[in-house]
Length: 128
Image (cartoon, rainbow, N blue to C red):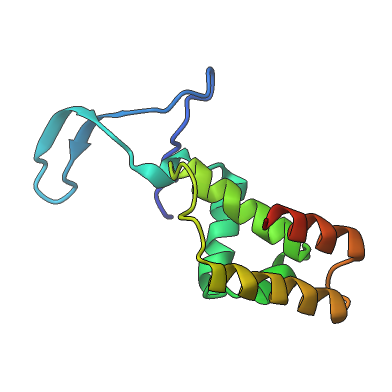
């Protein structure tokens, strides 16, 4: 039987939990104090599942779409939410070349029928 996962948020008030004691299972050494759980413990179970799928897909949005059964805009939105939850205030502003490539990808997705016109319009509007 595996050890249960450590939760990162208080089940009562949803605030960040801190570790009060660490213990070595081999030699019994104990450390007491106030330790942070780390950035990934601030993610919800749904965000952790998304991140797991995203990493296994090596960041390929199409593979993430297929595995989770969600659209490209939803993948993008969930990734943005994970980035914000990990404490990144905002992604680095993309350069013009990267932005042009993103717009081409949105139009490609539209042409292939992977996203609808409304989703494409929203994505293109958001990329300005």
